[in-house]
Length: 509
Image (tube, rainbow, N blue to C red; front, top):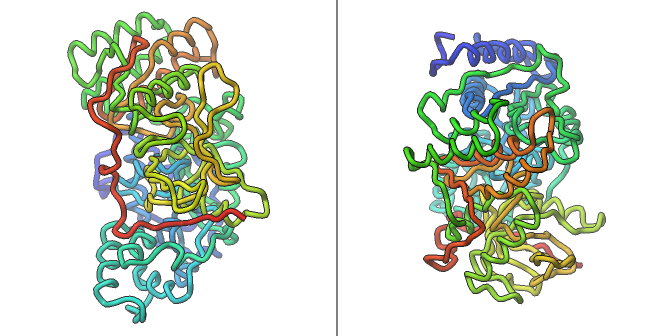
């Protein structure tokens, strides 16, 4: 462990050594930086690194990634794979959502979504030569349609961002120029790291095991299990030697009041009223915790209010739209949306893959940029996606209080479906983080009064833990059912676009 660039705690060091041994079984020796060819390696199976927020899971994942890359393992990002690299040992770092993947990318870890690994792009042969060159597996090409300056822009972008589509966009190309379609992955990879593994359901887990003979899961056992998993997480069924527990809370050592509150929930003696007194005390002494008397509407456009009950979510969304003067018949630029899935028949499988591969997967956070060029189309910014701009046929549903049927201001015959995103349930917020998070405390209190439990713990505590740990810098515990007035209109000028926005028009047929 002396050669490691960071100082691990004892539990992190033990986990690192266990993972190192797992990788050695698969033919990847991190100590000697030696690699067996993939066909000569054995199947290592599944292992999980488990710990609560702040226990160092992400740090461990990042250091393992660096060690694998230094050993010569090829990192697969999901946006392009060189043909010349298919005989190399490979690593893919995955997260269930774009937002979760973007959190890792901000820390220098080249993460992508699970979907982008399950489905891979098919490149036009002419532009695949550029991709091979950028990936370091070919000579600089001469492309008639592109100047040397355009290729230089592509190379400079790739040097910073390691995104082939982004680099080609920087050269002035659109996605439809160089990506001809998407296909289900047929050949397996080697090693997969999956962050936020508490969100995996059984079907995703089985898909991943088919692709990765060596799979490492990073998960938080205190979070909420997927709604279709009966309160269990996929890593809970692993044998004990394959579950590596991290106990020490590192970020708590740095005096993080948000994590102090989250981990206080583990005390069985603490009731809801006791917990609120702790929050109130923290708010008096630390400005990173705020005892909020109202919901701050300015934050809702980028950081949704976290609630438990759907009725609360719908009321807050309608209040948000009213104070911004949004008409019932249409959306206004800057309104936040949440992708609720795709309504496409099986015969349009390719269109479904196109949309999902561009980030429009269930749960994706999206900002509305305005209507598209054709009726029923919307221009969208997918938060956390590597290439965020997309134009797609859309079905937008605005739910109304006490009404069974939602109002639909925009509706293509088929396409991506959206709910409003100014407020979301705590279940749907898992895997995402925001600088500032508002938690609607009356909903947590309602869960406490019901007395429900999940996996042996009061439900309100699991809800509070997940909601609190979505906050990176500041937590607002909102205690009253009131909404502030906005101090400025909704905006889109703060959304960073690639050098040349990639546009994917999905036609209705």
